[in-house]
Structure formats: C-alpha cells, structure tokens
Amino acid sequence: MKVITKENMKEKLFRFLKVYAVFMAVALVINLPMEMLIPTPEEKHASGIIIFYSLFNLAGSAVFLFKNYKHLMMGLLSFILGFVFEFTFMRPDWVMNIYAFNITGEIILTVIISAVYWFIPWGVPAYIIKKFKIV
Image 1 (cartoon, rainbow, N blue to C red):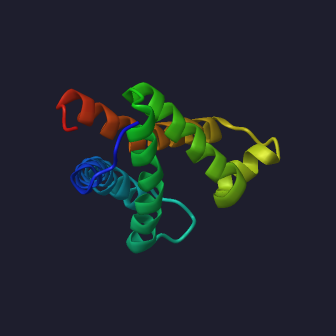
Image 2: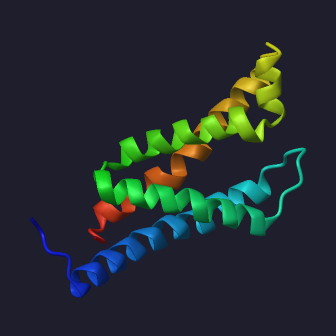
C-alpha cells in the first residue's frame, strides 16, 4: 500500500497543473480563435468559451493523467463527448437540420469541421505532452 505524504500530494498537484496548463493553452491558442472566427448564428462571448474549456479540460486532464491514453484516444474521447454536448445541450442549427433529416452538403461539411474542432481540445494537448515529455 502506498503511503500518501504531503510531498507526494504536492508532486501530484504540480503534475496535474502542468497537464491542465497545456490543455488550456491549446484551448486558448487554437479553439478560442476558431470559435470566435467561424461565423455561426448564435452569439458568442469569449468569457463563456473560456469557462466552458476550463471545465471541459479539467475533465480531459484528469482522464489523461488517470488513464494515460495516447493522443488518438484522447482526441476520440473529446470528439465523442463534444458531439454528445452538441446533440443534447448545444443543438446548433446543423444538429437541428440533422434531426429534421435535412442533410445537405453544407451540413456534412459542418459536421466534418465540428469533428475536427472537437478532436483538437484533448488530442493535441495529449500529443504535445507525450511528444515533449512534459509529465
């Protein structure tokens, strides 16, 4: 049985904060600009997007540390969770068109863009962390 010490807890917290910082850096450098630059009918606020990614990446960082998944698996988990959010809570226009079976080339392109968009938040940080041996 492993004894939990104060130093051990500090080390684990520091490790988590390093991982979380990489996840948030990717969100702020890639996802936030993508979100703000891609035109959509709904109103967007940078502060709301940052709060969302703060919580989303909290979960992603924990999954990464506890499961030690590679970047492809992390990206797929992010993609799946993102699409669950899109189809259950966010429901943008393209999701409503899919529900109405109004599937056009534009909708298919939007789904592909959204898939890439949702793969990035956990896939890219996991790649960076493993590639540069950050933890």
